[in-house]
Length: 451
Ligand code: PFF
Image (tube, rainbow, N blue to C red; front, side, top):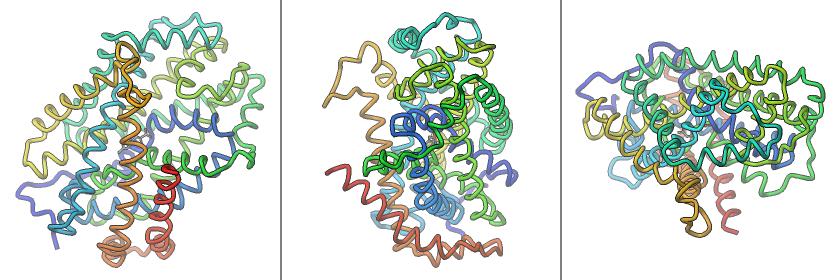
């Protein structure tokens, strides 16, 4: 049965590799390079890493396969997909929630994405070569993010790059860009790791990173790890669903899921292998928090042989990762307007990106002229990040798991997964995880949050 009901030919990935690169590009982003290291640093290193890997495998992986399955079955955006599988029900709201989450996340993701571009340019023009301490680098960062016009300019530049790629469509834009950018990212990461691990004293960082200290693990750690797994794997908002909707029926969904999850996790782990050895080698603290990458690392680079070149390469890596994720966020919103509202791709991309940029302006200014405008002690940026990342994504993920496990049913889903005549060995484990473990785990996280 074709549920898509399209009058026009839907776009599709050109190759299996292209799809895996694009989905990995979505997953690998600021979440891996900016968030993961500082969260590990604040939560005791190796022990947190183990909990994170467990959450990824037990909750993230089954939900990703579910999203790919719904997407490929319906060949539609999140709203259209839930509507097609359960017409005239409240489930369509899960789709709307996803599109809203895409809108909200991109509005602040574009701000941080802009910072990464700014740092590439500042590194290229040697504007940040004089930091002898992380305090100085921190001050520089603070001055930069409070400069109204500069941050808005870079936020607009970041959105402009995403627009340029998404305008060219799924195959000619997203797939092509990711096929070039993702291998580049891996090469850069390996070069950086080599540099970091050969620094004197790097071994202390490796030890901090890899040696688990289980006394640091509590309910709070599991909560943070699960939230991070959702964000990092781009789950809970129909992003993987949308990317799955451009897949052909010949594709092996289960193996594609495994590749994307392994890729995303490997990159996060490798990034830790760059940052912690470098931070420890330079005698700095890994517990700095969100500014770890922007204010501790420039100081690390300053002290390091070939530091300026390393800093150019590092921030390029960060910018690439942010762009390939930014385009996936934009594509979710764009696909909704193309499928459901019958807009042309051009109209959908230009209008939605302009609105997302405008909505992101107060987030951009949350570190400058709006830094004192707070509600419940949080800035506009904090609220948007909090609502989308800590509520909409886990809620969307939990509802997707319930939908697959109990509403649309694992029988239908398995039929779709096995369509290309494969029979994944772990399908029974998947069925158990998606019915019982994923929804219960997220529910537990929500309860823990409110208690
Ligand atoms: N996975 C991205 C990261 O780790 O930075 C962020 C993200 C992209 C979240 C796309 C959600 C999404 F749909």
